[in-house]
Length: 310
Ligand code: EPU
Image 1: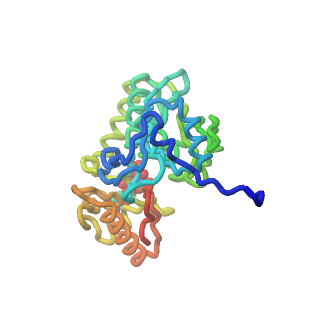
Image 2 (image 1 turned 135 degrees about the vertical axis):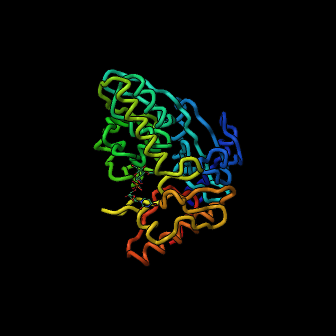
Image 3 (image 1 turned 30 degrees about the vertical axis):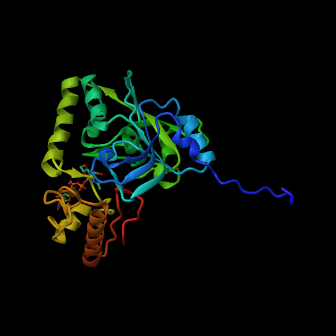
């Protein structure tokens, strides 16, 4: 250039359209456990993560927004069309060793529970009560019925924004209640697999505990309906479900979304619920709990595209 300054180059994402396996304007509803979703500008489903380091590095270099999803069982798609690339990881590899189990991020937690139980490996029975993938469960330190990811995770295998594979130990993941370093500050990192510690026990004993988890879940949660699990985190020392219930909100309905009559911290999709219905119901639940108890409920679900209304 004549004045010697380099003109900033607009980042091009044209290459995405011809990247092998990428689809354009992909509807997200079929990907959503909840049955709610607009579309993704670009979408790819990967059953293998071999190409992922290069892809993640390139997306970051070109400043392309991207979102990694698993089962989308804790994610509300709240925008008409998600910009950039939505990556669905459907890797499903489990390798059970003597004291540890290596599992790819796209594997469903109940499958991890069932496979390890069958092999006589104990410690992951709680995973039978977590309806999501291993990757999502590591990000959110998912837990149920007395167990959570941080109790058993030895390490997570990840891809950093430069596209390098790294191994993170459990302390490096900085787990807290429904929280991790990935939620706090590493949203551009991708978890590809996790390694969990297990112990040896007769398969029948492990399986019995796993069935107990499933039974308890069936008894207390509306698992026969579509929901995103617990809508809000439990405030310290209390339970979001108890607080919402005490406000008399069970059964409250906005459009196709309803506060579950079975568990007040679950919002179920009665059919045809929109993201706005869910967000409006969440706002009502927060307002009522704030007015009555002076407690600010914090969303547990991941809302993509629009912040939950205060
Ligand atoms: N309660 C009510 N009314 C309700 C629901 C619950 O009074 O409508 C009371 C219950 O009687 C109980 C207390 O609230 O005394 C706690 O309820 P519950 O045992 O059902 O557990 P929770 O705290 O609501 C947590 C996790 C669940 C997990 C269960 C079981 C959170 C936000 N939720 O629920 O996780 O499955 O324990 O371990 O931590 C999720 O994160 O998506 C999830 C489903």
